[in-house]
Image (tube, rainbow, N blue to C red; front, side, top):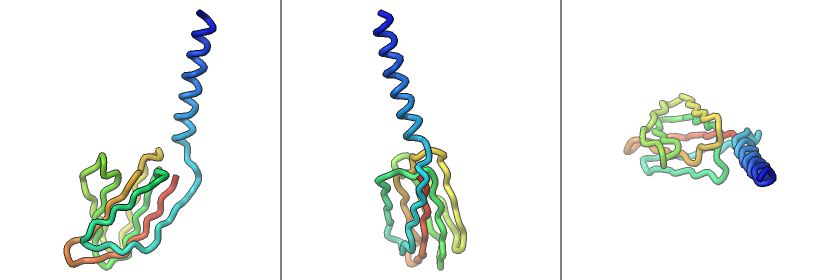
Length: 114
């Protein structure tokens, strides 16, 4: 009985260790340069999720963004010349959706960290 209990505790500790390792920062900064954004929605999907993402809008127009489209529906407007950072403190940013108003364009840089 005691051996079985000790094995179960050990298995659970291994699971907890793996969860903690998965949530630690990897230490990588991944820039995505010069994304041409138009009124056509641009869906950027991450293979390795980011902990945070910074969106730098070089304009000339505003950009709308949704982070984690599977869970979020609210769009955030990033004005021309503005920088917006979203930090989840865990590697859970799986995608970013970007677009402009009809007839407008913008040049955007994304910098993700994991």
